[in-house]
Length: 243
Picture: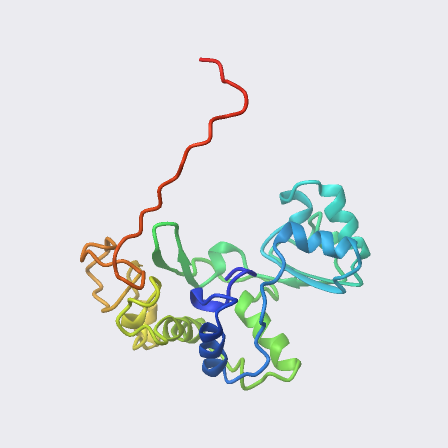
């Protein structure tokens, strides 16, 4: 997920979405507004507004623009946690706590590409030392913070199942939101392990079908069910361009 949306493509600013997610997770403390994007986060850190940060699967001192500003922000932050599969990076050097994470070939889970295709990522190599999956690390920390019942996961397939169930909330026909995985909600651990690549929406799991085009039924994700075209008036560049 991203900091500017709720889970499973539910939106901030929509009371119905907020209520649906809150009821599903049995919580009355769900975030009510979007979080900060990466650049804004480090700006806030520089201003002393962020007191703790947990960085996972990235090396922002190298990957983000203005590396000196990013480095300064992390130096100012009172508590920095970094999860990484590499012990010594430009970012881990600034961390108060470094947690050993798995590398890509050691992970088991799912990945989704830009054509909506969900694929199983299957472990190739055993994890060295004390390296653990990201979901396991998050679960353990959450349980230590008192959220044992809410993070009682024993396998990453349980998290995927929960996500699938969320996409189906008030979306049984797949018309309320384009992301709907109702066809995958009944997968057991074996079924999850054998999952074939699927393009969402998945209304019915058919392992042999690997491609699904959207809108072939002539219906769109709008209140009317029709496509909405918006006329745009082109603004010419202020300066003429050369040929």
